Length: 150
Image: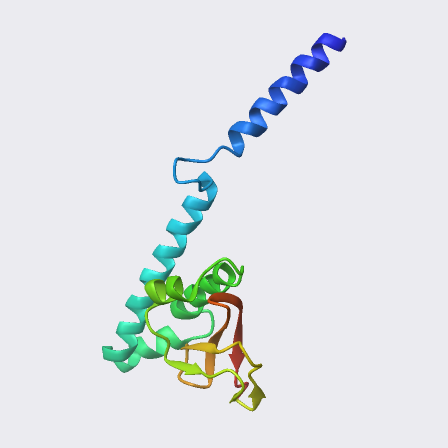
């Protein structure tokens, strides 16, 4: 019985090691897949953003719907970018320049922006409903929605 437990334990250790093995770049395989998914979401976001700028009124309304395609993509990006592991430069490369940047120590929509933490603003439905990415020391510290609530 002890020998069976030892073999079982050894197999569990080998399986765990295989699951956490890294590739040559040092990233875990599941992180690579997640990074690819984030890049695809960002590509969709940039496409929808272009459509908003040049599209028809009907398409613009569809993109701006609650739980519409743009809202869903931005919500997924918010979840992925709020981890504290993504840099300001990565966000710019993924999403493009923000629609607005709010300086640290100022205010946005009546709320103070703490010192040392500027906000990157990406509009969903104009300047009144937007995704706010808070930057601290070059990293995205948090990501949250601002809804005007009209």
